[in-house]
Image 1 (cartoon, rainbow, N blue to C red):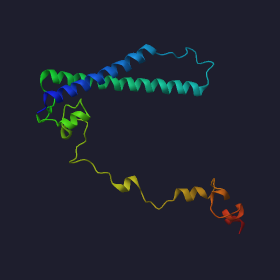
Image 2: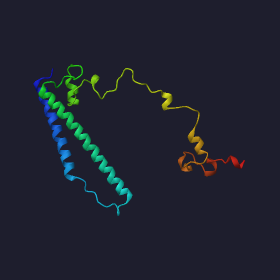
Image 3: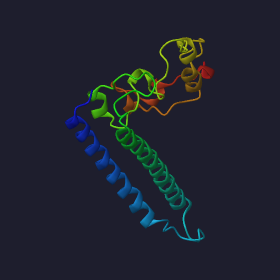
Length: 168
């Protein structure tokens, strides 16, 4: 069972994280979208960069909101007196786990984000590294590579590197 000091430490950490995430979201909302209305005079690369940054900011904001929901659920569990007890098994969640993940409401074994260890599909190694006897690089190198004599330790010239079988 968690001691009063441990609960206070964890609550303090949850509130600190909540404040930090709230500031981050508020800051991003203040900034808003300062992009130009017209794309006429912009280079396509500039537009791509702006789009990437906008999508990144949206993804980070969504992640912050999800974290805030988890923090609120953990704080509500503290109010209800169920914090530190696994929602699935009813067993105590170790303090070390709560220190690492203060929003944890499940033991590691029962966490909904964990993949089941039993009955899980094992990927056949032959599927990830097929050995079908085809050497794609060698097949493509017949048409030339980007290697030059400077890529080799020994001194070579271009005539020694490549042999034209058609010339024989």
